[in-house]
Amino acid sequence: MSFINLDQIQSALNQPCPDPGRVRDVLARARTLVGLEPEQAALLTRVTDAMLLEEIFSAARGVKETIYGKRLVLFAPLYISNRCQNECLYCGFRRANADMQRMSLSQAQIADEVRCLTAEGHKRLLLVAGEQEGPGSLRYVLDSIATIYACREPGLEIRRVNVNIAPLETEEFRQLAASRIGTYQLFQETYHPQTYVRMHPSGPKADYGRRLLTMHRAMQAGINDVGIGALFGLHDWRFELLSLLQHSRELEKTFGSGPHTISVPRLEPASGSALAARPPAAVSDEDFLKLIAILRLAVPYTGIILSTRETPGVRRAAFALGVSQISAGSRTTPGGYGHTEDETSGQFSLGDHRSLDEVIADIAQLGYIPSFCTACYRLGRTGADFMDLARPGAIKAHCDPNALATFQEYLNRFASDETRRIGGALIEDHLQTLDAPVAATARNLLQRMAAGETDVYC
Ligand code: SAM
Ligand code: SF4
Image (cartoon, rainbow, N blue to C red; front, top):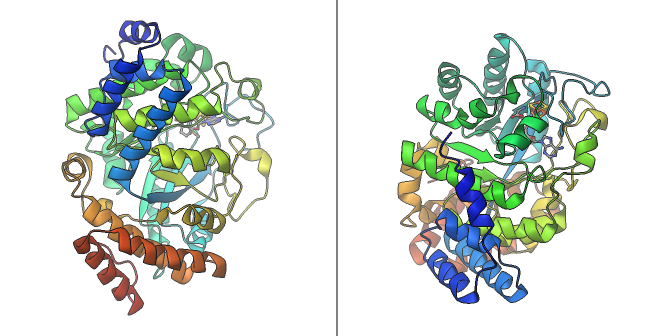
């Protein structure tokens, strides 16, 4: 576990407030898109001066705009089961929570959920489940993935299934890889070993080391897109941020590419959890935005995912600072999209209750292009291959046209009249801002769709 160097992190955090000159040197480096050393990121976490903070935010906005432009990728979580053998003190699904009504969706129920999501216009799902006992539990997940991909009609299909399930062994990860998943996600929750042990008193998840090495097993098994994260609110956010960076460097050193995404869930109230109601290391909105900005500067090519745990206001501020993927119209109850209205069987409370269409209208009004693109995954541009394209900026020639085409596809079939009006104008404006060859590619995709094709991408 030596790649999380606790002493180094602690000593970097204990330094005094840095002088403005050093902060500006670090920001100048970050603006060149080469990322930051963990010590440089640590230095930024210690900034408290309002003017310097604004300079951090401004540098993060610049990096975000340069690499990701105006695109925001959209997805929805699909909770298939809330049965769990762990006792994570912050989670509504923990085993001892007798108030939780337990359910594992049948394959028919999963297909119903998928039909609800595709009818709204979703193309990307994140499959989520509690950790169940027994050899049948992986089979259940694999069957569920197959059900999701099989549930398709023209223009109504899930094109990429990402997965957030409990750690597997290497051989099991090989089976998961064979099921055509997009990203395998797993959050360490807290990288601080003592806090980890307190938060996870029983069940397989109590083993800190096994969880920390999960992505090594996944990548060894051939899953080359992995997503890491920490649950902010359990321990000092600065410690978690630096640990995420160390984890990311370790994966890059060992496998040639770091994580595809980093998620930044913040602890929310959950039924039957006193701890979630009063987070032990609550993160203020200002610190939350600061940590997103520092992440953006430190690992510029790694996607940052923000969920509907956050309120619309925090989400709007976070988009500009570095977030590149968001969930929308989410439910955390198995069956929550179609089968059950039972809010008490959800995992935690949501901060953003708006529908996909409302979120899309809002972000389009802010000038962002909602994207449902799945082209890289479908064309095999993943892992190190994706990073080779992303670093020199070549990926933008694909991302902008694909984002516009998938947004147009959404507007044609799923949007309300108002969203269609806002979106149509935005697409026209955005085309004017693109370099001529990229704009030509985008127009070509849009023309193909106007002629009746769906699912066009490059
Ligand atoms: N059960 C698997 C696990 O724990 O790794 C995977 C799915 S779990 C349902 C997904 C994530 O939800 C957890 O990794 C945790 O970070 C997050 N979570 C749990 N309780 C939460 C809460 N009260 N507020 C916000 N996020 C929470
Ligand atoms: Fe189970 Fe995951 Fe919730 Fe922990 S966070 S209780 S493992 S569902």
